Length: 376
Image 1 (tube, rainbow, N blue to C red):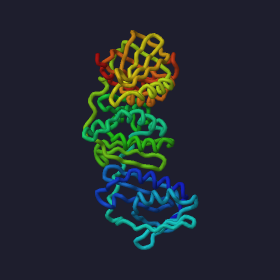
Image 2 (cartoon, rainbow, N blue to C red; image 1 turned 180 degrees about the horizontal axis):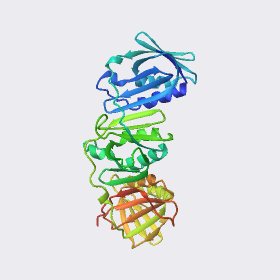
Image 3 (cartoon, helix red, strand yellow; image 1 turned 90 degrees about the horizontal axis):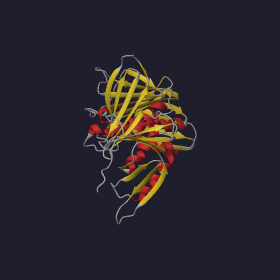
Image 4 (cartoon, rainbow, N blue to C red; image 1 turned 135 degrees about the vertical axis):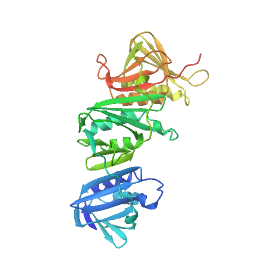
């Protein structure tokens, strides 16, 4: 095998493939990146039996072939090379990487022991990379991180015709985003629970793609997998067994009050006030007409308070939230104005974004938080 490729193109492709490699592979070959050449294209693949990654880039092929090398080492080398064309070739059981005056020799791994990548399921539809990346990041923030409760570490993807709904919850908060897309078939319907971290990493890497294809198997080849493809990159991952609880019923049907606050000043105020909040202690928000007062700390502990302008429709109310959960939600709404819809101090509150103070809230994204009950 022998090929030439631009340094930046190669380094980016290797880094993208290597990110999915296991830190402690169960067998040595799974630490490798498979390089294959043919038809003027170079493909790089990684697989750990859970997640597969494959990317294709243009290169100048002199001799076709395939070889398996250490992914982490290849990533470190390609990232450190000078900005010159790279030549990669095989010499017996070794791979030689030459770039300018730099030359590296790597031992190969047994390519015949490398497992075949899973087949890509048939495409279900497409959406722009920017929309997909934004939606996934908004929802994945609410996914759980406790591996003993695997169902809560996933993002639920629900496809219904030209509408896709993403949802995630860790029991203390719930994020839901609805978006439009282009289905392959008008009657497309599917549900999948996808590992949140894998989905978030994949979506972020495809943010610049003109369109991203989502592929969910409906029986047959590829069942139990989701495939995501765009900009010459393709990822598959195994789905999580099970499903989220009936999350839509958690959103209150009616609210007793709505508070509207500019997002940026609120974020900064929460950050400042929460400096004195001990671990697992809340930030209190007291809403009165025209003002919200943020407070943290109590008794003999350090205390902080700050006041901001806020528009309140409804009765005065005081609610308390985990400050990090509140900050996560304010970042996720991605809007200049935040609306907090409340019922009582102990019932779930729903955060959504607004383009302006006097505009309607954007209901395509909702972030539900359970308040922390205040003593006394």
